[in-house]
Image (tube, rainbow, N blue to C red; front, side, top):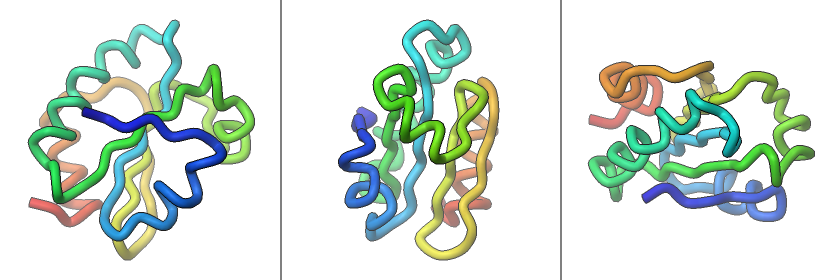
Length: 108
């Protein structure tokens, strides 16, 4: 299951994470976000102990989303343990999620 994160917890949960992180910026009214939600829950279960999947409700966390430059939903942010974070916009197939986890987060 994905974990909710807020502006108050983003720094300690996401940026200070000890391993790779996937952050889903979503909104309840967003159709593509609703498509991605079960895929991300599957990924969170399949990669438990290897990556952490967080969700940010942009309706509740508008300031956080704005500060991070989130303009399209869903936006996925792949943050490797070391290296530069990379983003993905829109709904993507599970195979693309797995590919990004392997290539960006360096997790098999």
